[in-house]
Amino acid sequence: MRASPDLRTTVAVTSLCMNSQAFLADARVPAKLYAEPFAVPPAPPPPNPVPTSTPPSNPTTNRGLGEGFSRAFEFAATPGVFAGIGYGLDRVLGTRPILMIGLTVFAVVGMFIKMWLDYDASMKGHEAAAIAARKQADQRHRTSVTNDFGVDDASELAGVTP
Image (tube, rainbow, N blue to C red; front, side):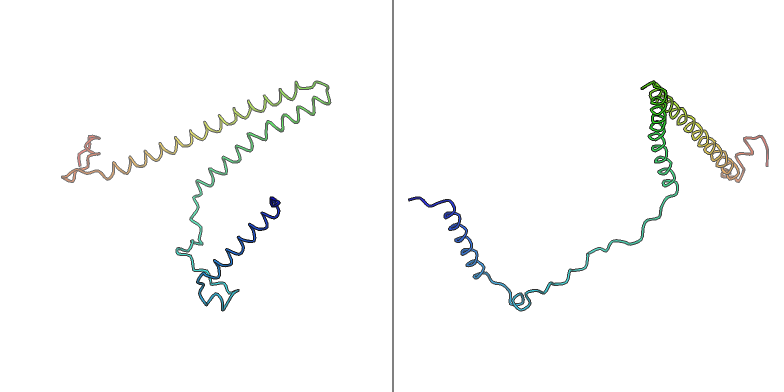
């Protein structure tokens, strides 16, 4: 007669438990673990502690990041607001999608124009600052250039003799 699956499972689990108990009885465990069964050894200190100070922040990077996030939110929110206004006007006036689509397109085009003008103004400011810095560096260079004989090269180029 064949044994039922429940009986086979019970026999297998029982033999597994008996084998594991025999294995654990043969294993050599330090006496310290038997003496303090619930004691937990202290954790070792970390090899390299993490610095708690934060690195110095760069105001230029933070300002650029803030400007980028504000422009992204503005670019996403403005067409949404205009679409909502258009939807409300369409419901009131009974012209289903016409004003919503028209105001959304108007907002997107307006955002692109505003972004273009902001970019253009920003680049003109950078160019003006670069030109001013270049002129200042050029002026400093002209006043400090002398040749090996102690004669100012800039004055010779201008036709002035020292």
